[in-house]
Image 1 (cartoon, rainbow, N blue to C red):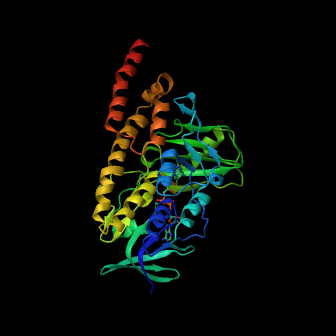
Image 2: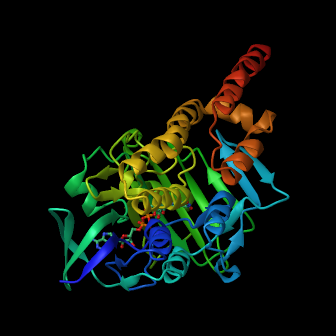
Image 3: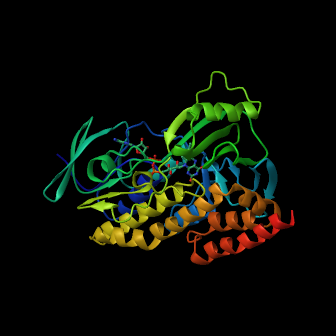
Length: 368
Ligand SMILES: Cc1cc2nc3c(=O)[nH]c(=O)nc-3n(C[C@H](O)[C@H](O)[C@H](O)COP(=O)(O)OP(=O)(O)OC[C@H]3O[C@@H](n4cnc5c(N)ncnc54)[C@H](O)[C@@H]3O)c2cc1C
């Protein structure tokens, strides 16, 4: 049985970042169950903060990966619409199959695609990984295996998965991104236009919707007058941040990205925290102490996402207030600029600034 320093399950964004960092110093193997490039159900929105972070660790994004830029967004809340235009793009839209393969191929790790991990066991100081191609041994294991993570199921407490998303890819293009907050109570529907097609989807917190998600998306497609005959709607869990506090590592095993439920509850963006958590876990492995992963995580992602959860509550549950902000203030422009450009956006001051707008909203209601 071959022995590695680090085994990574999953060749998504988190697996790609960890493989890139760790393979510079250690003997690393990556297991991916699908053949690369593998399809990943995703809107493909990659914000500037993710692009700059990847650049800061040496992963410069190739121009060929850019399908379009995020520079115009039409937003609809409570039947009112506004088009937000940005002088500088907030990020890019990409194809995740190509984007993720680009990241993983930048690493010096041994990559075994079409290799499904079937089981993992701890044996003394090592981890034994059983795959459909045989068994492997490793000092550390990184569960970068996404929303349905085997590593999470086996070694970590399972919290209730609260989010779900459905998406379809239709060969039609649009001038701008469209976000519709009226389709579901706690989430949104989207059109993300690429070069030759658009990703059209809906994502939300499950408990608020009665209809099956495919039906919700079908209704949205009908409202857009779109035919989707012969095309398939795909459904995938959306592991929003749910307050996972000190359980991102156990013994010599870490979980990162979707496996650790790190999707931003305000935007639904998962790629930034996938990349950043993989960086933090890799840093702790290189320092030889996994308790540091927990410390780094609590100081950064956890703090940010705790505040994001509060903001999401105000934003999604008080839609009249959100509509007021959209139509009467520059809040949305400023919020999107901040969220897409700054990895530490959800500060205490930011939260207080939203609260300060509430009296203005109440005054406007009294005037009406
Ligand atoms: C419909 C939808 C739209 C989204 N849109 C956006 C968006 O526009 N922007 C954004 O930032 N985020 C978006 N997200 C979230 C984003 O896709 C995820 O947060 C992100 O992909 C997480 O990356 P990851 O590396 O943690 O996991 P993943 O990208 O899911 O990678 C996990 C990998 O592990 C592999 N794997 C799993 N189990 C095994 C196993 N047993 N053996 C071997 N390999 C295994 C999988 O095949 C997969 O390749 C969206 C999500 C959905 C569902």
